[in-house]
Length: 356
Image (cartoon, rainbow, N blue to C red; front, side, top):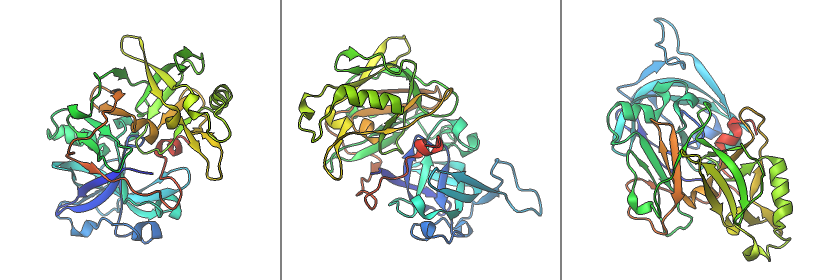
């Protein structure tokens, strides 16, 4: 499952559907010179049709006279892309600025050919991007087209509600409580915060103290250290057929706020369990073993984001979250919720950046 929306690149603008991905840092769209199946099955950016295009090297430097621009290869665990870099106009809704991006020359069939969307717009912190000029948030903020240097994400779990990403503002109608600030930790560029403990109901378990959790809009799953997941499975005993799901406790993660006091973010049994394809009841957490200093690490994807409205303060490297409201007002930027891609899940970006 993925949530995606539209952006425009070039002048005159060419439209693309992209995943707004907090687990990566660059804008990547298929290029017209890419002949692989993963590109030809999607809309491709034609740099020859843009009057404002400027080829650059992928470190952001200008191309020397008489030289060709260099190329870049980015690996995504199960696949990779090779592309060229350009500077051109990038528009997210009505917010536009000049910015650097990657136009694919080749994309591996797996996983890119199976996606319903064309590309990826990375919204991680600047250290995740090739440079600040490749960070769309930095360029929009620098151009003065955002009221505030932040964005917020509301993901609906119902086809009756429209999901929304808002740039430069926080829509109050999505808030069911006051904002709770959480400081981002580490310098890898992920929107990750510190976990103080894991709770079952109201009871702390003294599991994974000092762990971190990264919130990733490009990941369709929840993931965590395999040893912690094994302990949770033993403690929860979710049952072979999910028959006792209503009796299971909430699964809570206590995150450290700016005053040092914990805030427990809870998932209901229906959020963290699922019925397997061949029957049976499973804990909906993938194994993800990230060694120190980056780990131990949990990754919260779509199941968490469907429950909590999240805001990302790009300038101050702060994120905070709260329970989403049960309704969604008319959004300024709609995100489409497609069917599952051929029975699989879309690119789990952060998991693949971490080599999982």
